[in-house]
Structure formats: C-alpha cells, structure tokens
Length: 477
Image (tube, rainbow, N blue to C red; front, side, top):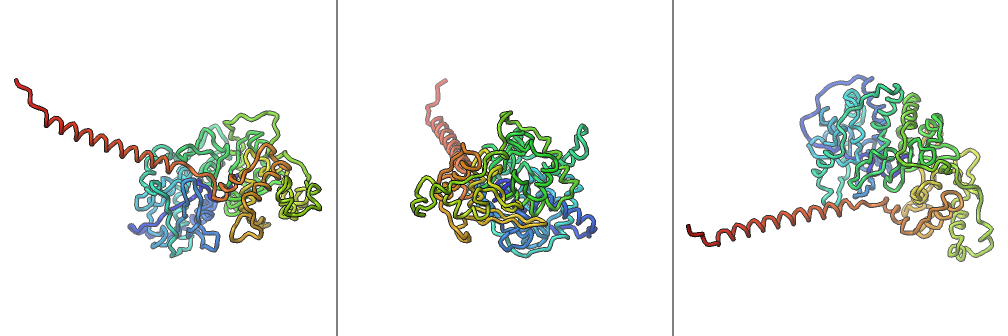
C-alpha cells in the first residue's frame, strides 16, 4: 500500500500563506468542526504538514523527496502571519480542490488537490470550519520549497492543471451500492489512494488507465492494490483488507511501512468501521489493466524458512563479508535476533516473517532496500511497531554501506522472496537519495531553450528580411 517519504510526489504539499482580506468572522458549530476534523483525518493532512522530528501539528516543515526536488510542507494552521488564517472559504476551497493558493499562485501537485477536487462543497465547508477554529494556530514560518529552475516557476503549473486536473465533484453511480459509492468518494478523494498507488507519466501525471496498479513514491513503491489475484490484492478478503487498513499488518502477507505506515497511524485506524468497509468494498472492485498469469504464485506466498549459517559458521568475519555468503552473514548479525534465524518472525507477529511477505516477494526490490535503509515506524492503538533504519547516517545503531545493503537485499530476495530480482550498490544509492529522479527538469530546460532559440531566429529572420527590402532598388514602371 502507500509507502513512505513522501507521500511521494504524491503526497501533500503547500497551502502557502498570503495576507489578503481577513477571513469572514463567524462561529462554527462543534458538530461542523468535528466533521471537519474527521475529514482532515481521512485526508491525512497532519502526516505531511507536520515535521515528525518535534514539529507542531499542521505547522509544516516536513521535507519530502520528489522526482523533481525536495518539497517542504507549509504551515496550514490558522496563523494569520504564517499560516492560512486570512484565507476566505472560497480561497481555501480553491487551494484544496484547484491547487491555487490565496495569492493566486499555483501549488505543486505534491499537494493531492487532483484527488481532493472531487470533494463536495459541504465537506469543504466542514474542513474550513475545522482548520479555522479546530486547529491551534502556530506562528512559525515553515521553510520554503526551492525547486531547480524552471520547476520553481509556479505559473508553469497552470498548463499542467489544464491538462491533468479534474474539475468535477464526486457523483454517485446509480448502478452501485451506497457503500461502494461512499468507498469511491473516500478512496479517490480524501484518502487519495491513487496519488501513491497509480503509476505516473512523463509529466508526473497519474495514468488513470492504470489506476491503482502500483507506483513509485519517493524511496518506496506503492504496490498494485487492484483485484488482480496475482499482482494485486484479489486474494484478500474484505475482512483482511479492513484489518490491514486498521492495523497496518496482515500476518504472512504484508506490513505497512513508509507513507502507508503514516496513513495507518494518522488516518485509517481512526476512521469508522463503516468507512473502512466502504473503502475496502470499492478498492476490491477495481480491476487491473495489467494481465497477470492465472497460475502464478502471488507475492504473499513466495519463499520458505531457512538460512545459510552453516556456510560461514566458524570462519573469520572479514572473510565471510567478502565472500559469497556476505548477505547471510549480515542477516545473522543484524536481522536474525528479531526476525528469527530462519526468518520466521515471532509468534505474536510483532516481527514479521520475511517469507510469505509482500516486501520481499514483490515485482521489484524497492521496498526491501527502503525497509533496510529507512526502517519501519508505525503507531496504532494497540502497539508501536519499530524497526531501526540501517541507512541513517546520523541515528542508525548499525550503519550499512551500499555494498552491504545490496548483499543483504540479494540474500533476502533469493532466500525468502522473489529470487528473480537482484540489487546493485547503485540501486541502493538511488533509494538512499530518496528514489528515482525525473528528467522533467532537463526536458523543461531543453524545451525552454529551444523555444527561446526559435523566437530569436524568427526575430533575426524578420529583421534581415525587412533590412533587405529596404536596400533593394525600386522597380521602374
């Protein structure tokens, strides 16, 4: 499901402040504010607009890696100086649904307004009430987003919006049940599932023809969650999907990490059972545009218990680290104490098995690498699941370099998951840097350069033509 760092190019970014006419002074009812609080929870606003390293709720300051550079989330508290306290309701609605902030400048689609565009006027009104009177104002300026040229020109988003931003509020499908329609409204709107789980095109737009079939989101990969029985979650029952959304784990199947762990921690676990069932009903009805092999093993069934300890036991540590069994030795030294010597996990499921596990048996190696580098941190009502990051250069107890992470990843994949995949140190470095980069910046620069060159050549040609006309001798009658 959704994975971390971002809620990756997909994920929420600036509702920037601007001093305009003050918002209308009005008092909202407690019921309306509470409704707005619930909708903000369903929209997972706090996950992106809060610096999780000691920041205040909704005050911004979270650094999020995107394919075109680092985006900083902004202060969306009702602070009139640094937040959105001076926004009128119309300005607030335009920011949430159209990606246009109060001063008329465009937001980047890291703020999932593409999904929020389907929200009803009634729900926007409730959200406005909550943000104006249910959120504590924080008078602190969040760091500004500084993308490379020409992505720092926000006006460029006007063209992007014309091409890719929907402009329709949700309408129920009369051929579907009320639960299905509610599920679609939440999944495609407030919960913005497609922001992470849908692949993106060359201009970073969601490829809706491949809706929910999986997408790269920063340093993580949000897998296929369609009803495809092989590549998706078609083998999951309604109860299993609801359990996963509520707890972030499904024994011998999957565990939430990264942005999905945040979504469980801050959003899904707090939704009503009725809404979780509605989301599950809709998602389980989404068909995949991909064609899977009918008899193929799912990513939840691959791998088996075992280990290679006998291959290096009794040898020197340094020799083992340089040999064919380096991955097994790294696993024994750093992973087996929690996940078990056979990677079987613990009986209570707190530490999961590494076989029959979506992370090790997926279609790519991204989440194996990212879990090793970034760890897991998930809070639910009943437990706090934590795996230390082995790639954090400042806080890691054990710091693994790219070669070591690649060796460990290859061991995990070969022994417990998708043995067709291999990981190189270069692959690890890409994830360490926040995920694959887009060539949009280079393309935009080339395009702008070509445009300027064309204009200059046209002007030069026009000047030359006019000067030549002036020097030609007049024809006699």
